[in-house]
Length: 498
Image: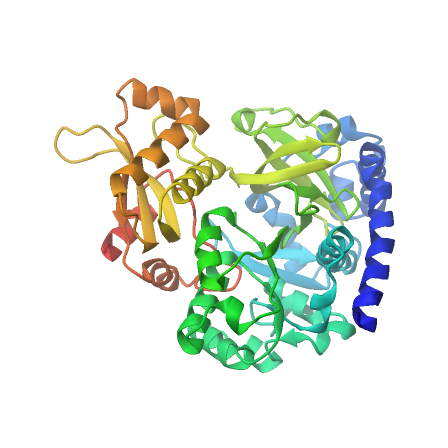
């Protein structure tokens, strides 16, 4: 065992003990954190406008601070962007993470000195947790790659601005710098196709042990490695045994990845965002991610089927239930208050508090009252892949409300197959029956002959990448929208049919 791997094991054990302290006291940890956030920000503009001085508990917080999304918080953010201090959080943020907005162009998410510290610690602790659980630390001696956006930052009124993954690149610890790939120059390449080709050149002859990134973009890297090296990824990188990912559910990609790699590898799921780092997978034996309760984020939850009511009930972790779909609301040490992140989660455990990401509150299909969510279509896809010989590169789902002739409406699945199933009819049947099992409303609509069985539109090879490139979202942190309640994405993909 090398000195570096031994040191990693010792450090992992120390972090595991610290983690266990707040895991054993979850409610008290969150209550204490809320008080700390309120006390720190009580003299900011937001704190004064929302009577922070009088907030003593969660009930007071609910009365004084309404739920807002980015658009509703924007008047405060615009003041921060303009260079004002003490607006949402004391002083000015040290960064803005620039992300794509859905209604008004770019979003500027403030990142403070404390919030970036929590982001970095969480990503580090996810790996240390894996070392502590498995005893595997040999990978620290090899090369690691994190597929991410450009680390080049600009400035806006004296505050550095960039993508979150690019900002995070500035915080790679010194002891990992020699292990880290690609080179800084390659990481700065903006064009994704050029960047991936260059990364392949830099890494193909290296001892890669850890690979991380959003599955859809790592898949592109693996495919190019297969082509250039004429070998499976696992043959090119004999010591590659750990894949770290976030952003999307890995399960629909798993079969394709194992084919590209040539064997199974361990994986760690993360739940990061520009707004905070919320959870990481803490067990190789169980599904779900440990909700981080001591990382500068106070959580509230609203049942998703009540979210659009005038005054939906907001609860804390103390009152959540297993298996319920919740919209996750956050308040952070970057000055986001009762902020609707847009993600929905379900708890799979309360001791400890573990979650899965179930979708987006704005990304669902309910054209006929079925309210199908991302988790349900991904589970159906996983089942269909497992029970057939199909391999899938990417997919999305949209309703077809006005079909041709006298057909019943249906859900249309746009799928880019890496390998089409030998029996497509069986694949469709498994998809549809599994979705009916996942969603009782969809079952009722099929049984009541309101909807017909889903249909598949096959997309040409590279079609999803072509679509993402056409909307300026190829690579980086961008990911394909899994569900739409309209035909906007569907109409674009219809031009890319096989």
